[in-house]
Length: 165
Image (tube, rainbow, N blue to C red):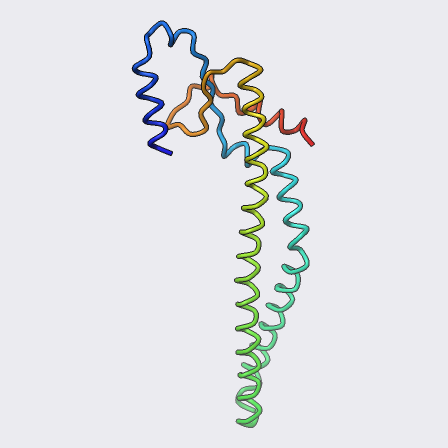
């Protein structure tokens, strides 16, 4: 991506000064679009709802593990060796199962979040292109070290995404 930005910069710098006066440039803060747009908020709620049941199951399992550990600590000295080892084995198996389910949940959530955000990015890119064509922009950047607020069209993009269904 940096190579493309460098190429654009070289092309802009090699353009005649008169062409600069007529050039219309805009900037979109893609991170802000992903954080503040209505589709992003809907996607976050959708993901929360989608993973809510699994989260609750993990929380319940975590409480059960805590309870088991507490019980084992209290009764360890009074239990026969075979019974204590059986409880430790059960606790160990449940703990591994908990860790596996937790890791799987995180991975599944990250994958789904990536899918949802990719869809939102596609929507945002279509909106940016529509704004560029309608308002006659020559160039719209999504990454910059600095962008003057006067060329920032992020609010327009967020508003246009609200109007989309």
